[in-house]
Amino acid sequence: MRTRRRHGLPPPAGAALATRPIELATVFGGGGVFGIAFNLGIAEAFVDAGLDVGNAASLGTSAGAWAAAHLALGMRFESSFDAFRHAIPRRPDLRSGRMAATCRDVFGADTLCPSVRVGVVALPTLRREILSGGDHRVADLVAASSAVPGMLAPHRIDGVRYLDGGLRSMASADLGDRAARLLVVLPMSGPMFGPAGRLIERRTIREIEVWRRRHRGAEVTVVRPTADIAALVRRPDHLFDPDRARQCHELAYGQGAELATTWAAATTFAA
Image (cartoon, rainbow, N blue to C red; front, side, top):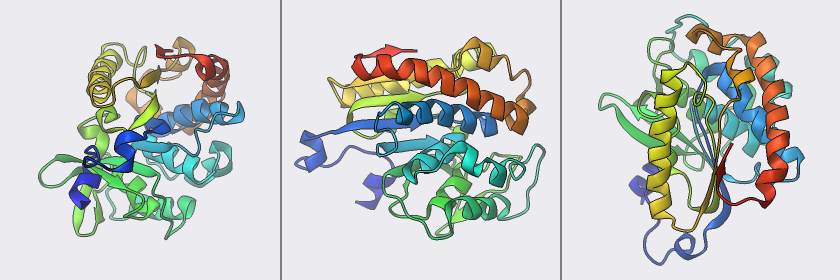
């Protein structure tokens, strides 16, 4: 059963989830501190509009892991930004435990949260895995999912070393939780970095189609940055600029506020 949870496989036949999907699940993609800001700007606007995003089952990758943990624990971007804004490196820092210490400061040393799952890549196999906040501490999950190759050292959990899940997939949307509605937030898609952003989006759309086939009849919403938000980032290092992240959060909150009313009444659409 542990392997089934780790890899996001559908529940066994006869399980309660198989016939009664939860109402809402969320998937948050990667994108540095900029991605944290975008994910939380969108999600916080939904929460403030009365949509129950904070209590949804959530799958996050890299920056998305930060967002998923924030929402599940009732935290806001502005309340924790100063705690991590300068801790996320803008240049390589391969000291062991570097990011884990920051994650413990932000999320607590022993916090568990079963509604949070994160995408990681295991070493040495480079196999994509999904780890649960019901099995591991949230700080460990976020540190592992954020261990960008070449920027941060791998993070060890139960003797296994893990890297940023974005190495294999920026969102792992195909492994999102079973639900009647799926919200997918993709900081690195659409107009971001031109062809690179479009490539990430195409791959994620393919993942979403896999998810749809598993959960027929479910509704999916995909949210990507507007042109104004994408214009904040011209180079990869801009993804780790705290000042740009703060601007991104403000703009993303505005985008999310506009989407929330439509989303509450809509069926499948992409924004």
